[in-house]
Image (cartoon, rainbow, N blue to C red):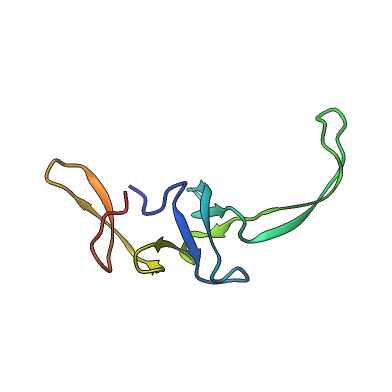
Amino acid sequence: MQKLKTGDEVIVLAGKSNGQKGKISKIITDKRRVVVDGVNMIKKHVKPNPQAGVQGGIIEREAALDMSNVALFNAKTGKADKVGIKVQEDGKRVRFFKSNGELVD
């Protein structure tokens, strides 16, 4: 079980986007990277491709961040929080915030 999942609200801990919040839109597990909506924006030069219907120009999109540079956002405390995994009595694995023991899901 992963500590971060798509749709989780995270806060960036390091880099040029430090302190920004957003939802995870994509996880690249083999490289341990995440793409967060509206965070770590880059400009990309795109060549036009009329066969695919792609117009050329400069587009702005999100770049991937390393998983170690983001942390799950705890809405109760308003801060970044560490996440742990524990097994319940029925054998189901759940995520919880380590600061207050509250379940994430």
